[in-house]
Image: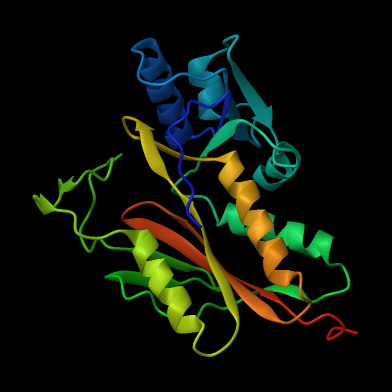
Length: 248
């Protein structure tokens, strides 16, 4: 299940108010001034009330700084259906997987719901398993240009981009399914809607939660492959739902 929408959102939540978040806000505001994108309000989410975005951008009627932990913000913001989009930070942990994990634990308090190390490689040139079991993936074995929009013609190698990270996770899910029940992949696919600014819809995140709910509805043990990806890069994690009664 892949995210993706070209509709202009009412709200855009920018994760992080540091150097990346500040750049994204500036780009989005310029893009709106030029008619490239429209939105109702920007939300900049950072734990530091004196973050770079707050210091450099000042105040605006259509922009708000949310001083909160990222996970706490997402728990509240995604609790109800929302016409919004999320601009992830390249330095953030796998926040959307963590949100799905919290939702699953709240839905099934009687079950063992936990992240499971993702041992299956993706087959991409860069593939690193983090201590928490998440795999960080990239098709690039070169240094990508800053704020690359991942066009059809790769600017790093000056040749057509023949890869798509969502395909790699589809293939990974198929391989995992050979050894046990697997749902997904649940994919949050980041696409550029303004120059240098990629995002995915809140609706897609909530749809991913519905996929996890459906996967666990039978009560049998199952794994759910979850990825937050762009065309070239991504993070992949495995959410394990134990069988009902197995944790007793």
